[in-house]
Length: 374
Image (cartoon, rainbow, N blue to C red; front, side, top):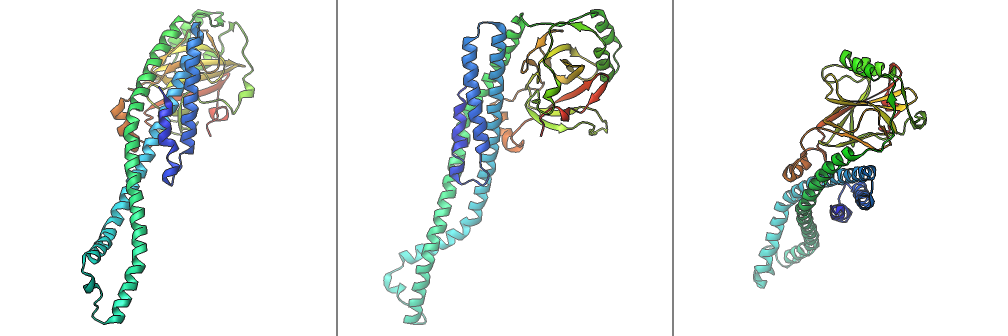
């Protein structure tokens, strides 16, 4: 996908005199284009399965960022076009009346224009009035012409984005499929082994709550390579998925239920990655949380990611930061749904939710103190 196709929509925006600049989206689009180019180069040079996994992860992230920027650009373009049309309709009747007056003056015989009921003085005054009104009319006509040109340009830019959308949606889906295959072929990750594997099976069978299950996990011993110290990452961890925080820790949901984690709204089929090097302590279905991924970054901490549609990896694998651990659910939009939803959905289509909980020992801790969510 040539994400630079996004840039005409974003770069031309300031030239149109838009009230809401798109410098932020232009930066996102340029960054996404650079990410995609780097990912494609890494993919071409990949010799091992883990190299392909890293390159494909970069590719999917680049597509996600570029499509988010494109959707937001289309949304703002639609808003701007609507505002221009309203201004045009508000001014059109007034301008058309004035243009009609000028046209009638232009087509009237010259001797009649020199006559006025009040005599020569009235004729002179009316001539002065017409001469003073004419520049104002010309200015109004010029403004109207620019509005019409902007409307036409916005419409053309929105229509030209269709090919980019189609290519992007197809490209990200191909990358997801290739990533799943590359993860299956990955065999060289370090591992930490449970000293009592049967204890995990008993814990799964007896789990009644997420809190109880996570607390039980911290009591299971394991052995293997050490991980980087987790405490210095406090406040700077990236969210494991592209999205926006829907509910913070201890905020009640619509049913009045309070949970110690945060809820992140995401796009369908969004990629979920590790925010820090961590060991997979559990992955799979758990209670009513869909698929759950529980990561141990060391130091007695656990990160719980719940609500995934697919999970990647094997129990005990030690993953580097940024490694893919799964995909969110939902149906990825097709080209028509993407374009149609842009104006109404606030630039995003975040219909899926990822629940993120952080724990230290037996106690939950506020993820907002660890993730850079502000």
